[in-house]
Amino acid sequence: MDKPASPRPAIIVHCGAWAIPSEEKEDHRLGSLRAAEIGWQVLEDGGSSLDAVRAAIRSMENNRALNSGAGSVLTAAGHVELDAGLMSGTTMDAGGVAAIRNRANPIEAAHAVLESKYTLLVGAGAQTFLDKAGVPSVDPDSLIEPREQVRLMHALERDPGDGIDFGSAGVSGPADTVGAVAVDRIGRVAAGASTGGICGKPPGRMGDTPVPGAGFYADDLSGGAACTGWGEPLLRMGMARRVVDLAREHNAMDATWLAMQEFEKRFAGRGGVILIGRDGTIGYSYNTPSMATAYMDSELQMPYVGGLAAE
Image 1 (spheres, rainbow, N blue to C red):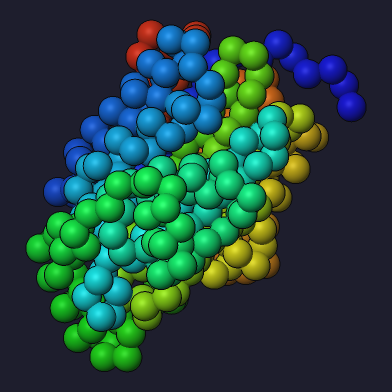
Image 2 (cartoon, rainbow, N blue to C red; image 1 turned 60 degrees about the vertical axis):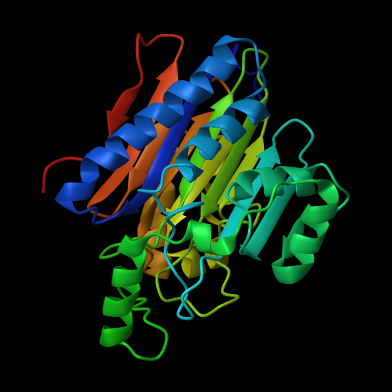
C-alpha cells in the first residue's frame, strides 16, 4: 500500500436519508450544520476524532426534530427504542447498544461499551450494564415526541401488523439514522451512528446502526463511514465496511457512489452513506430524495450543507 497522504482534519455528518417533508427540511439543515460545527470545534481545539464524532452525534441526539435520542420514531408498542454504535480506526475497538429505552444519548452508551471488553449489548442487559457504567438514565416517556405518536397512528392504520412498509423504508418516512465520521490532525479516524429505527417497528428490532461493519466502520489505513436508510439490506451487505474497503482503491466520492450502486442493484436498498478517506477527503452518496449532510475541513471557512435540494 502506498504511504498515506498527510491527513487534514475533517468531519462529515448526516441527519438521515429519506423524503424529508418541506416543513422539516430547515430543522434538518440546521441540525446537520450545528453538528458539524460542534464536531469541528473539537478537532480545531486539538481533540481526537472519536471525541469529535461523539460531540457531533450528541448534538443530533439532543435535537428532537431528528430520529435519534429524544424525538425518535416509536415502536408498534409506542415506545422509543434506541440503537447506536461507535468505532476507533486506530485501536479498531467498537461499541454498540440496541433496543435501549432510557438513555437520551445512546452514543455515550455505545462509548461505554467500546471502553469495555464487549462490542454489542442489547435490551435490558445493556441497560443494566449502563447503570453500572454510570451512563445517565432518563424517564423513557421524556423521549416521546407528540409528532411521532401521530406518525405511528398513521403507520398502524396503513398496516395494523407492525406499521412497517419495507418497500419504502428510508424513503417515505423517517426510517433513518444520524451519523458522523471524522479524522483528526494526526490521522486518527472514527465513525459513529445513532437511531430510533423505523416507525412502527416490532419491539426488539435492530437494524444496521449498532453493528460495526454495517452501520459504521473506521480504519486509519483507509477511512471511516456511517450509513443510513433501510437497515436490513445494510446489514446483509456490510455496507460501512464495504465502502471503507472501496476507499483503498478509489477517491472518497467515487467509493460512496460505487457502494450505493451495489446496494441498490444487489439488495434493492434505499439510503445513503458518508465517508472520510484516510487523508481527510470527503464523500457521500444517497438514492433517496434527501439526505441532510454537512462537512467541514481546514480548507473551508464554514461547514458546507447539502442533500436538501428542493423537490
